[in-house]
Image (cartoon, rainbow, N blue to C red; front, side, top):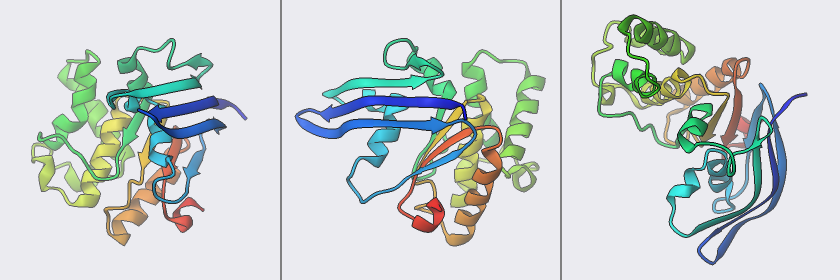
Length: 209
């Protein structure tokens, strides 16, 4: 099976604190990989190395390599380009203070897409992929903060999908959601793995299974 990400001898420090020690692992294309473990063991730090989110933390030092499609992301990738290939959905929904439409369109505009018809088509297709279109299609100009927590999280998934990444990272995406919203997100992830490689951090053993 194709390996899309290979981690080799990865070590990470925040200042003097050695967080990740000699990590070696592979992630397969079009699979869901769940990372589990107790609080504070470095799960979130590990997936944040996969799109260089830890670069934003002062005094971060990294040794080893993370290969995406055979290229070391710490040597050869422009960070902005990398984050279009490796999207991320966080623990708590974090929509932009914009309309539903503009939340999804934002990444497309950053990529240089400006034709309204193309953007509108991509927004619709992405919201459908995130199982949100039927709930919001008549209110696309509504502020995203007016959505429920579960809808906001699916909007954040749509925002990540819009730029057509290869990999999507999920950092405990259901921890702030009710059981019904959690079930919808889990069902959505199973559908998305046919088109994307998914890596999820979770405390929930049932969810991991």
